[in-house]
Length: 448
Ligand code: NAP
Ligand code: HSE
Image (cartoon, rainbow, N blue to C red; front, side, top):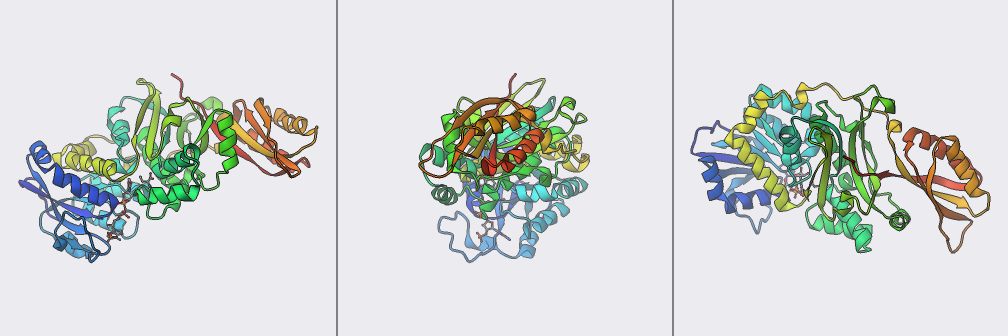
């Protein structure tokens, strides 16, 4: 790696030549003249670090001799002025990112796992070495949410982030609800399309969305959010019955990421953040309900601008490559490095966030309770909820062909989550019910 800032050509060291990496190469090839005109310098791929350089790369636009699996040879390559990391994972890729930054070389990355786990140290290293990290593609694929929060909404005091941050899960839920396809078929399609992580458990468990939420909430609230404080529930245990019963009530199910500042009246001292990723019901009229397939959306709520919403392709080769290359151009143009020096707004410069207990969250909830088909059952359940101060908005009993227990579906008015869980524990213990009730948050749109 060399300091090529003043040369007419800038060498790009590419780590990873998979779905996103090939997209980056395609863009650099296709729009080479436009980029060179904008930068006054041309971008050249100088070396590509991959896991297996012998792999047959049929559609590669690059000469085979550029590929290596030897990181020392990669970093010794003459003329690399910027490193683009689109390999993924923490080990060994984290070491490569640290190596580039230690050499004073800016890094552009799409790697949310690495940033969510090691962001503080990486940002500190970048600033110590007077360089920077471009990470737009790490959150919500092609949607410029990092730029929106970090730069365009700088005047705002952000109160909440609400969004769909995983394209694979949204693709699966869309396929199941709109096309009646199975979970397994939809996941396989998302993998074939290149949306899913190498380990798709990260997607369906909600972890990938939690990593993105931690990165975005850190920028939005100016406090360092630990990904492990995000209450996380995936779509892998979602029951078809709940999707169907929710639809009857006018709701679509979405995996929603939420980071919200709790008000002091909600039991928090004032700046506590409630952070969660979980399947939620949204009204079919809510903007989030109309985010389909691999699209993501993020609603940012906060004055003086008021609520703003960002929507677009949250995963996929070219949208993600587009975000990577935009970062690359902004880094090479120099203004991104300036932003690192001039704004004290990077994760290593922040205090740790104070996470609010999930029980302080207030919301409406959907409940499904397996109840004995006897006349007293509604009175017993609503009695327990009433004692906890939880009032009911709707109550339905669904018929089943056989069996002693029938699904009772309840929609509550706004309730404190802690109160609800205590009531559900009592409902679970009733003779008239079986198993643990299902509880799904109902997200109501941000109001102006
Ligand atoms: P991918 O298709 O699995 O490609 C990974 C690439 O990295 C491959 O070229 C692989 O080499 C290389 N690689 C893996 N481990 C390596 C190692 N230890 N050393 C050197 N090279 C290594 O992954 P992807 O979908 O392009 O995703 C890449 C990154 O972008 C991930 O961080 C992902 O979370 C992020 N991202 C992806 C999307 C998307 O829609 N796909 C969207 C946003 C962000 P070989 O070719 O030799 O196997
Ligand atoms: N696997 C991720 C998703 C890729 O499906 O959203 C984009 O970060």
